[in-house]
Amino acid sequence: MHVDIVPVGEVSAQVKREASDGLRSVYDCEVSMHEPQSIPAGAYDGDRDQYRAEEFIDLARRVGSGGKNIAITPKDLFYRRRNYVFGLAYLGGSGSVISTYRLQTSSDGGFSNRSAGEIFSQRVRKEVVHEVGHTLGLEHCDNKRCVMNFSPTVRQVDVKEVSLCGSCQRNVL
Image 1: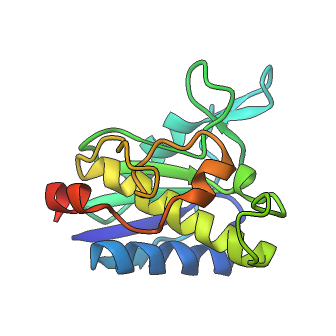
Image 2 (image 1 turned 90 degrees about the horizontal axis):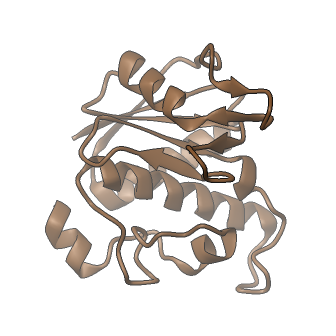
C-alpha cells in the first residue's frame, strides 16, 4: 500500500515526520510526501470560523498520488453539525484528512509524564493512523486502547495506543 501525505497550509516538518512514521509503523506501507497545497477554495465557513473537512478530503483525493491519500492541515475543521473534528475519512475511500488545530493542547490532563511535544506527536500519529484505517474499511472500535476507537476529545485520543487491536488488525492486514 502507498499513502501520500498532502500538507495543506503551513504544516511543520515535525508533523509530517510523525504522520509518516505512524503510518509506516502500523501499516508497514510506503509513504510519500506531496508538495504543499493551498487551502481549498470554498472550504472556509465564515459563520463558524472553521473549514469544511470534506473539502480537504476532496483535495487529497484529487492531487494525492497514493492508493490512500491524507491531507494534514493546521486549520480548525468541522463536518456537518459537529462542532469540530480531529479528522475525517470515508469508509473504504481513497482520501482522508486530519487537523492539528485541536491536538495542540499543552497537556494530556495528567495521563502521563510526557512533554507537551511528545503528547502532540502521539496525537498526530494516532489521528493519521485512525483516518487511514477508515479508508481501509475499518469502522470505529469499542476497545478504548485501539487506535480505531472513536475519540471526540483529546483526553480520549491520549488514552488510545498508536496501534490496532487484534480484531482490527485481522480485519485490515
